[in-house]
Each structure stands twice: as C-alpha cells, then as structure tokens.
Length: 117
Image (cartoon, rainbow, N blue to C red; front, side, top):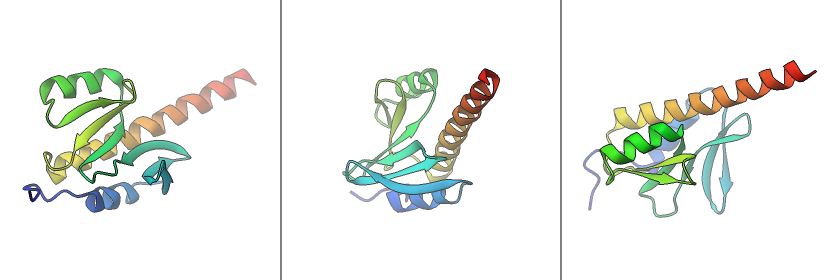
C-alpha cells in the first residue's frame, strides 16, 4: 500500500543528515544516526518503522494517543514511529526533537564530568 503522507526512510535520512553534528552509521545491519557518537535515530529493516530517542514520559504519551503510529521501543528509551502514518512536518519535528534530546544528554554528561574534576 502506498504511503499517503509521502514519508519514506529516504526522507527521514535527509532530515536527519541536515541536522548539525549528525553522522550515519550502521547497527545490527541497518542504518542509524548519531550526534557526537550517541544514537538518536535508527531504521527498522522492514522499511516502515524508525526508532527515535525520546524521554520516557513523551513516549508513553505518544503511544497512548496513537498506538497505531507509535510504539515503545527499547524499554522506554525510544519511540517507534510508523512512517506510513505520519506526515513530513510531524516527522521533521520528531527527528529534530530526538536530535535535541540526545544533544542535551551529551551536554549534561559533559557538565557532570567537568564538575568532577
């Protein structure tokens, strides 16, 4: 069935690579994307789902609001997003939020290590 929203993993890849500091790699045989070496987005081999880092409370809210489009992945660390059920604007926001979430984790970790010295 064609995707009515026109979102594909190729479009998600372009959105991710347009963000600062992003590199593409592979994990378990499928593409993933990282900020300063930290995972924030990965593709499922089925071509239909992408997994994005997010805060656990946000994941819970998304899954409750639309369980057909979103699912909890990796015990509350990622939200799975069905690319056939979200539009491009929503996907851009989700990818940018995942990027910002991971960049924020990196900043907090660096601050903690600076304080320890």
